Image 1: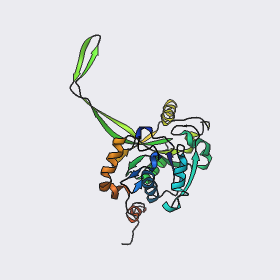
Image 2: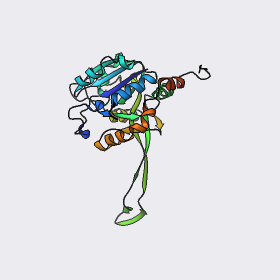
Image 3: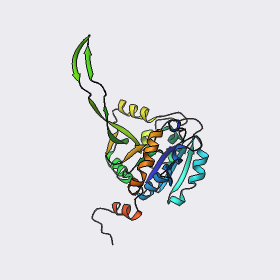
Image 4: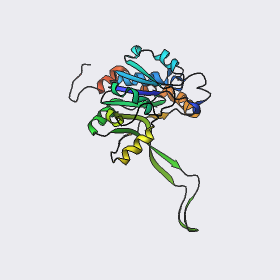
Length: 253
């Protein structure tokens, strides 16, 4: 399996933590960076090669991660000298990517099974599979449905249920073939285009742990929770190896 990690953003919403350090390298639990956790999880789940898309303070990312050998991975880099969006950094290196691959933001903490997402995508035949998470927004107010100056309906503090993108995806290389390298391409534009072509992306619903570290309060929460979550986010190798055995295979104790 191959994974692309997007690690080129400026992390402006996470200031002041990202003043001197790129967001994927901010420490979690005073022991690991977000990127270290992500690379370790990917290796545990069977990923062998990684493309790191870097931009802002990319030299620090490259110096810290190196060739990936200390994680048991082979890491290569693609650099952007101007913002290219979520998908744009992949286009210049598209021919070097396998037929199917994982892609994720470099600021996500989750215990999702990357191997299962990859396998589900490969079986689906979908151009893109988006890992999704159920969220709720509760209104603080009573909501009025108004039409031509009259109240047609009333809902007291309604709750809105919806699904959000986790920033974790599985992609097929040919999905991106029509786009020209060097120009920005966001995931929103890609999804709009696929819907317009009636080539619908698939979803991978997930209900485990997920935190997008985009704001200082998210970062504080990640650090507060990490001691309790460390065993879930960084499982022992032998635990993960058992999940990768083929169905019906036996393993020695």
